Image 1 (cartoon, rainbow, N blue to C red):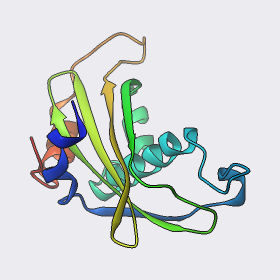
Image 2: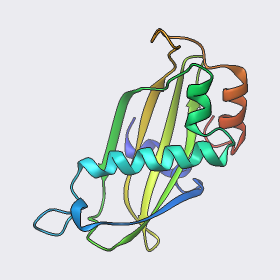
Image 3: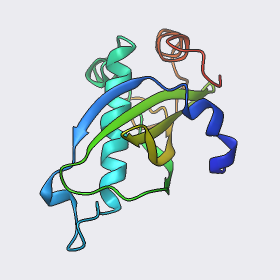
Length: 147
């Protein structure tokens, strides 16, 4: 998957989280350190699940976990200390055992980063299992983006 492949759905993602960049998230050059983007992706993903009516705690209560199996971040423009970024997210792929979350990070209407995280569905014994229908229905039907 390349950034050009996902440009259209990126613009349709709902705002799920707004974050002010902390001093501890930037380096000596006052640019957000790269690893923080994946943390921001996680925040966006969790808020999207809440928006869909299935906070991640409920997924775990049902004996499931959704570990990240693949991630990709495209850094488009820098982010600095005290910038307020908008995180947008939605599910763009949902197979029987995998869900892919697309995330866009914007600053003042300008795209600063985009990417995705792909998640397997595991049961309480940490074995691959199907994404249950109740979960698929909630996360896919929320916004019919790309699915």
